[in-house]
Image (tube, rainbow, N blue to C red; front, side, top):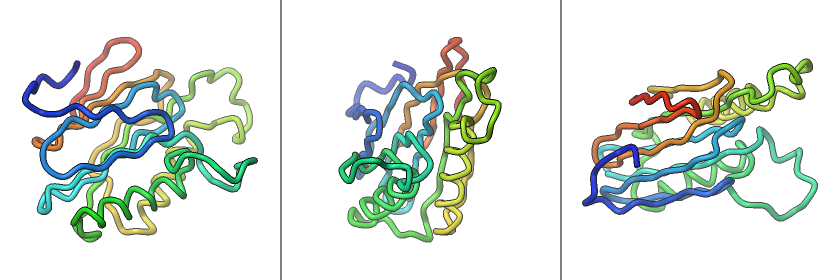
Length: 168
């Protein structure tokens, strides 16, 4: 565990998952290679959420049915909707991002293969459409990440595959 606050409940967000909470908790996800972990929070209303975004756009979907967090366009909307349903106000939402690595940089010769970069751009675009400010990020590179967000302190702890630790 990266954030040592045993009094807080810990909520794991799976791949393509979304979770939202009111009050204090630890939201965490792992396996962020080219995926992007998107944390949105409203400090005034004490509402926070985390989405584990896998791909940039739902137009890439072959199936009609998929998890809400899979594609950036659907995930950001679903996360915002869930936060608002729990009392968050759109103008108060702030974002922190992590992930979007190019896990096989030698193979990513075309922009189509640069999934990490495309995920980062898609998430930023969806947040900009909603005027949600990104206040901190640790994105790109070639190393996978795991993250934990403390909804009490609003700190995002990031651990890379090479055991580097960041707090943003």
